[in-house]
Amino acid sequence: MDKNESQNNVEKKNENKNEKKKKNIFVRFGGFLISAIVFVAVAFGQGFLEGFVEEKVTGGLESIMYDNAVVGVWETEIKGTEKSKTNLLKNIGLSEKEIELCKKIEYKYVKVHEYDDNGTYKVYYDIDKLKENVEKFYDKAQGVLYLNRKSLHDYYLKNYKIKIKDMSRKEFDNAVAKLYSQKSYEEMLEYFVEIAYDYEKIKNIENGTYTMRKDQIYVTVEGESKEEAIGYKVDNKVTLTLEYLDATEIYTRLK
Image 1 (cartoon, one colour):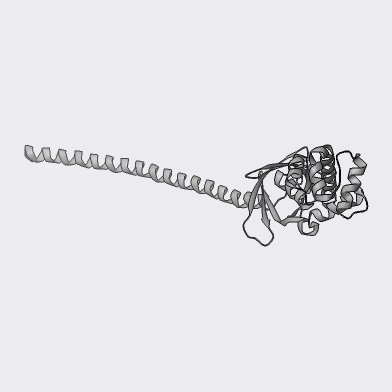
Image 2: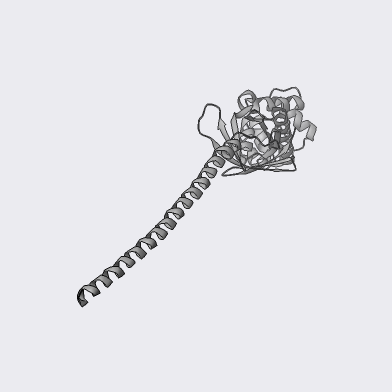
């Protein structure tokens, strides 16, 4: 064997050693890589599956469970707007001047929310309390007109042929009652109450079904498919706060 051939053999042996090292490195690295991929895939798969199951189970339960603190009957007293008061005053035929004098009188009505544990709800007015508040409003309006009888004297004299400037409150009340063809002031107020609203028409505001998710009540009005989200909060089981996009209403538990 000559010198060149001997050198070639040595180089080939070194190449073979290097190849074995590369293969060993590849096997070790490749095994590690595959193990890492498997570990990540399994871990991700478990996490994803757990999240999927939790979402399906928890989310599903949240959408059908009802907060016992909300179930019940709640009421709130709402102040009438200037428009609602003006409509009431126009309803009994008052003049623009009389309306201007009376439209600052406070007027309230009672709104009720009722949530059942079967997933149904109702929103309506308390008609009895509404009638009481309408009567109070008209009684206060009569008082304001009486206090301003001197400034209204010429108008009443011209339109109704009565002199109100020097009348007592009782005389004024009876005189106005006669203008409405009523026998007494009390009967006149009852008449005003009865003609104020179509009570049967406004009795039921809304009804439908509801579900609850976290701090939201999702209501679906009867006859519609789109649900509406209302934020809610219950304090000590006696106060219910409903947060709409344009308003916040605070209710007190009735039962």
